[in-house]
Length: 305
Length: 274
Image (tube, rainbow over the protein chains, first blue to last red):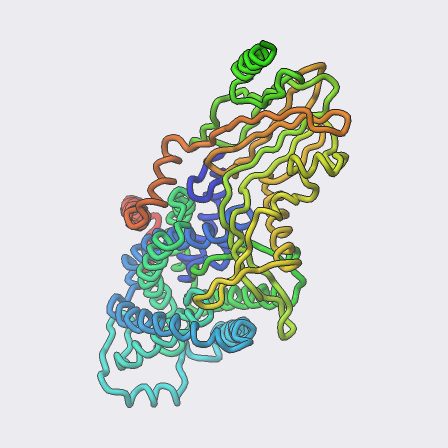
């Protein structure tokens, strides 16, 4: 069955788009990642213009993260206070990062450096998480332990607050600062922060894996709303019908994912997420060295998580 | 006396020919018509085929050029820098037709140069190359891109459009029988909304012997029209609508699953460690 999309300006197979949405929704509910890294390229393979694919994907993420966050909230996995504090930092960081990009673009090899830094960052985060969760699975390390040096440093910061849902006592300044760094990094690298946020919450804030995932989904609701609105008013690239089809699949997928997440232990979820991060890293690394099929392409819009 | 008669005859000929060319009476006229007055793009639109028909002088070859509205497209060029492949330049191609098909009763590359010049039926999308303007941005400045560099971008755009069925050459799409011709025009799902301009050229003995043109509007109807117009002209409302619909969908599905879970939980089937 085909449906014509007014903004994308083309027709698509309804069941194909529903299936894509459902797959990405399960990943989102399970790991707290937006799924944009997967969905935008898949939509482009279906012939959707790149800018429309990225913008409609952000619209879809609003629904999936809302559905996923509510499911996690009911399971007690969302630390609203932590999420909002982190969000305040990451919004500030994102704005600063966007301004910084303008300045840095003036220097010659900015884009090369950004791509390579992103691949190295994913390799480091994914590799560390993989190694750590493997140790935990073998029973050699404590669950989600954070380094002695780090906790001593963080312990000295003022404005210490207890976050009961996460079960951690940490300085508000540290949470805002971390959000600022993640938001700024995401803006500098031109990517969504999902891959960095969850590991940062687990390893640097000491939050339980499942609460980090639920809280990340909660804050993605707000960041993806912002991206959707900006794309709609500046580029007119949000196809609401495409987004509706995608989130018909993804909201249900997100619920299934959130329920599935209860079947796994924290270290099991972490090792799968680590494997996904490493796969994305390999794909990006491969794209950097592979000769493109056509040197001229339609320009991709920003966004995605 | 003779002059007055000549004037009268000319006047009659002009009236008979309407707005058409004055030589219309000397050579049999060329006409062009489509089997539908307009193409309607609704929610179930998945491309369509339009039939063309017309008159032409016997023994001529017929070419029909179909051009869509012009617009601008943003293109990126990938290149190798520091050993890795990445986007090295982004340009805007202005005034390129969003649809460009050349149908013919024979291969248009066989046309003599004089006819090509007169009709603009140039090989390798020459007409597209001539009408576009390529620009690059450097901060706030807009700079023209010219020469081979511009040609490479336009050739890239042509390849992208060919893959989507928006550009092409169909040398056997028109059949001439006696003094009439028929043809088929395939409109892909991605056909742009707006006015398609169809121009027929009749060529006989290496000379252009007549032309005719018609327009075919492609317009959105129903939901397609409403969403298309809203996203362009009421972007703020559209953005709010998009977010509201997404949030509502998330809430509804979450509530639905809560009820399903409670229901199943009551039966003791899906109770997990909360």
